[in-house]
Image (tube, rainbow, N blue to C red; front, side, top):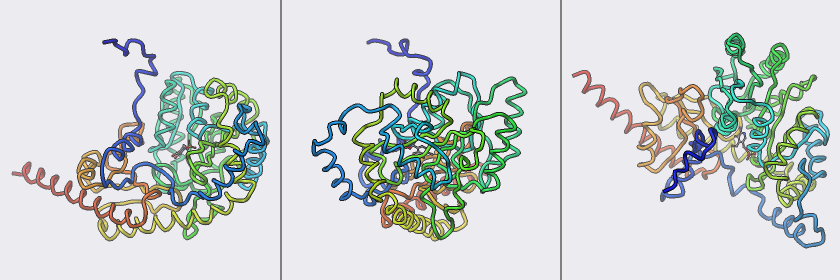
Length: 417
Ligand SMILES: Cc1ncc(COP(=O)(O)O)c(C=O)c1O
């Protein structure tokens, strides 16, 4: 047998499967499992009919470029549509500052390749999005977590983390943030903190990578568009690289997202992207462009907000009824996720096999922490299952938590004897 380990690069050796993707495999193998694991949009909310009309027109064969290679930066009319969309977010940009990426996940990889050398420091929230953690780790960056509270990243902890790295002679390249309905906590960064983070970055000469796929999915009962103002909207000196995506608002299968950056950096992202995939899928970009041009995206948004707000309600109601005050979570004000903290001494990695046995899965908290913490937490995604399945899933989860609490009480009683 060939030993492939010896052929692997250092990056290849250290690559690990994402905990979220792993849960996808569990789901594919099991019967009647309710999944609160991946942050998938609801398939019944996809505008199937409109997409199929657009695709039929595009594939009529009248325009050969539809199935041709395209520019690395992206289909120009789509970039123009994104300029308009960014204007609605109060972000000034131009087609020369934009790169269409194959999902924001590729954007994160391009950021890593263009900005990070092995040993460079990235500061990021504790906990943080696993896909970003993986992209930054793959290029050998050193990831330093910063505490957050219910209003997002703690600015004093941020300054302390920067100072510790700086005085140890390490270069902090950027701060990675998901200010709107963060994955995995669902938290919304306070507006005053957004401003303060920008000022801090200028003071410490650090870039900000703002990852914003959930901005449009605020829940109107507790949040408004004003609460989701991007940090990039107030960036006057080109400090922010801003990523957003059509994955959560149109469909992730298109793999169409975008990055906005100062022109000099956008040019580098383009070069890095040339080596990755030459260009994002041309048909996908055109479908997304048509969805913008025909007003489909704008029409979708209120429907999606109501859809996910309702699912949030169902999950929260179920948790309150079944688990009362034995668990804690910050109420999600938008997005796909609810971040649950178990009572001491329960641990989510011990809960997972019991939950699986009861037919429900989630992602354990430690997957999102760069410092080994998070075992008391779990991420529940309420976006994909139907309201009925959410109710049933919460019942199963509550039963599994009961199983774990019983097992833990028995161990406690044995130890006390
Ligand atoms: C915070 C965050 N960034 C990026 C992504 C990747 O999105 P895309 O489908 O655009 O690659 C996700 C997807 O879950 C996400 O939650």
